[in-house]
Length: 254
Ligand code: GLP
Image (cartoon, rainbow, N blue to C red; front, side, top):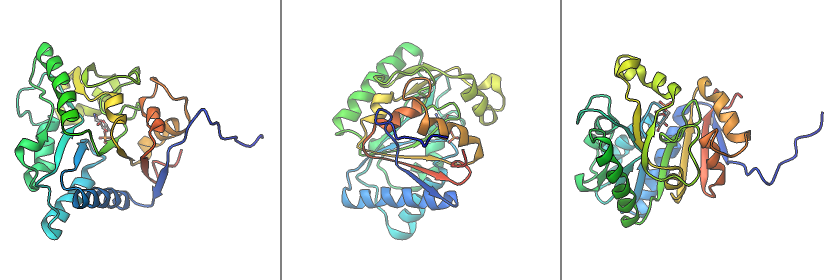
């Protein structure tokens, strides 16, 4: 069999494989902590889901035990379901409160989340305002990201173009299925969402991407080796010049 030749038209993504996900969570948390210490007015892009939860846990510990100070940090959340009542228990906004914001000292005025209770027309206006607010803050210094089983980043589902910005999107069936548990059944899961776009994400100065578990192995393989394009939005990450993909052994097994 011919040896695999590295194709310059298919840029690669720096990968770190660790034995346990806790090592990756700690490393990403330490990188964020270091950034916040050297640049207190750090602008962070924040993801939700099962992937980053340990990073938040570690950041909360660093805040409590090592006085990590978020008093000048600015945050922007990546995405939100649309069509939820304000404060819905399954909203990402609520998730962020209970897993991070309620336990650290990011000032309320510096916290930016997308409002899932808006009706579509208002949400579209909100998307433009969100982009402007990110720009006014000086852009995102570091963005934390997970990868969906279908290759979504944020809610940039298969089909998302490289030049997209914050907008309303329809959710992919796999995404809704994966969310069903949190909503108490598939029929309760919204069909639409609001998400930062691919360009919004790639404009961040640093990307810390994580994928853990065997159920992510196939999409990790496609992210690293597949053609870059809308079929698998996570492949766009290979176009970023300052990115690291953290994998545990199971996610790396493909
Ligand atoms: C969710 C979010 C993404 C997240 C992804 C993976 O639906 N929109 O931001 O990265 O899907 O989720 P998980 O980390 O739970 O596997």
